[in-house]
Amino acid sequence: MRKALLIPALLAVVALAMMPLAHAEVIQNEKYPLDMMFGFVDNDGNPHMLHLTGYLHVLYAYTLDNAGGFHMKMHSQPQGVSGEDLFTGAKYQGTGVTQWEQNGKVGTEYTYINNFRMIGQGKAPSFLLHQTIHFTINANGELTANVDNYRLVIK
Image 1 (tube, one colour):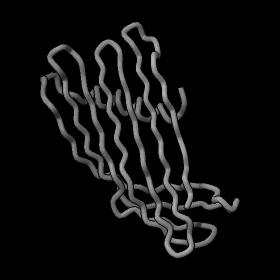
Image 2 (cartoon, rainbow, N blue to C red; image 1 turned 45 degrees about the vertical axis):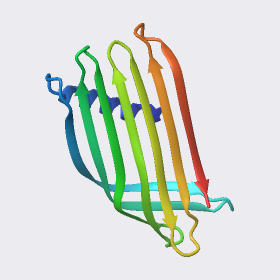
Image 3 (cartoon, helix red, strand yellow; image 1 turned 90 degrees about the vertical axis):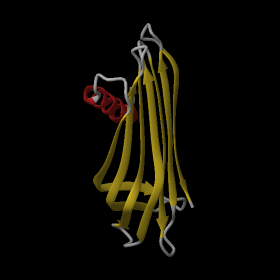
């Protein structure tokens, strides 16, 4: 399993542990501080290392159904995310949306879609990080579908 699947899978396990035993939707609205580094090479071969700060607003919804299954959704977007290129000093503003959904009973189905944009100020290049991950595991524990697409578009 690739590293990109580990974090969402761990979040799913934590979310299941937090779910009440009732058959009701639980919604959590959270705000997490963001302080991270992100590196990329632009179309001209120039390296960039951004220091990003701000917050991620995350909305979680969990539901248990009457058939013993579960449904989880997460929606997040950056709030006040800005960055500075440690090589050039260029400034960036973050925007985008990340969503994941997981449904399960005996098997599981998981979908993760991430669109994260950094808008370069002045002559700094802007970029879009797009990820799509989907997998399905049937009741026998067999992987029956697997998609893992990742691309970085620099403008």
